[in-house]
Amino acid sequence: MARQIRKQVTSLSHLMQKTYWKIVTIKPSLLLIAITVTAVCIFLAGGGVYDLLEQPVFAVFPSGRPYFAYPGLGEQWLGESVFAMILYGLGTIGLLLTYQSTKYAYRPRQAFMMLLIGVVLIVMAYILVEYQFMAKFNY
Image 1 (cartoon, rainbow, N blue to C red):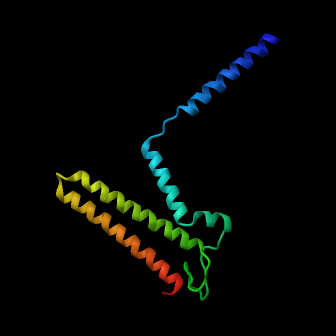
Image 2 (tube, helix red, strand yellow):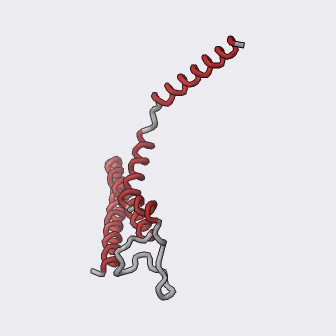
Image 3 (cartoon, rainbow, N blue to C red):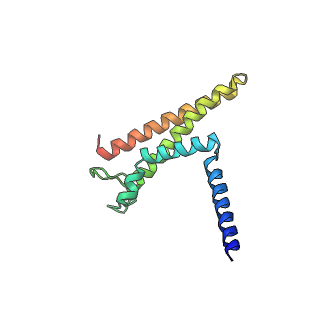
């Protein structure tokens, strides 16, 4: 009986040691790390922590029309936050497309199109974020 228990304990300790070394020596891909870090940054910049802690309403319906950014209120709505996160994501995609366009130096048409689309996404995200801010605070 003691031999069987000792064998199970050593087998369990061997399994735990093997699992520990697999966890310690794991090497995720750099692309996965970059995507995760970018998504976390967009979540934080968009007000995701506030949304989780305060649980705001999604939109306001004062006269039958939905408002995602109701002017005059100092609170943040969930719709505003989601919209801001989407716009930050579009801006990030624009930055990536602008960066990727440098790889196509020998295909100038494709490089120019990627650069143009990237710049349009960046400018569009910036303008819409500013519009959302101005709509919120009536500037």
